[in-house]
Image 1 (cartoon, one colour):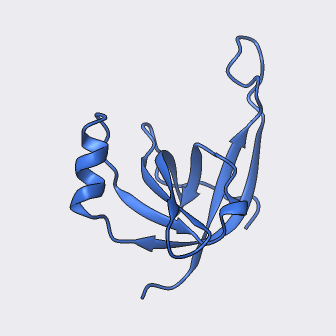
Image 2 (cartoon, rainbow, N blue to C red):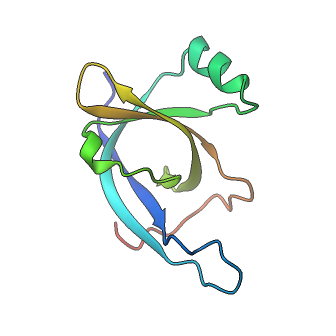
Amino acid sequence: MRMMTSCVLIAFSPDAHEVGTPAAEEQRTVKCQELSLTQADIYQSGGEGLSPEAKLLIPYDREYKGERELIYRNERWKVIRSDPYKDWNGVILLIRRKAGNSGSVVNRYA
């Protein structure tokens, strides 16, 4: 079993995508665990034109509030899909690196 680590969930303000509105983001650090991608994960996401690069478990579903981006392994990632975890009250996230990723992100909350 892989060890727990942490990731930073990024939430944007509701009006962040309106023209002329500065994007405000809120970052929260939560525990997570990387899981192995299965062929089913890749197949299901491939049908939507997306290909996941990693799979994370957030062990407590109350910690995930629908964020669409996160910082993991010092890189910015986009959440492709979130699913409930059947064995716990957790959430599984399928993620891929965000386009234009610089490769190093400074986490001001670490």
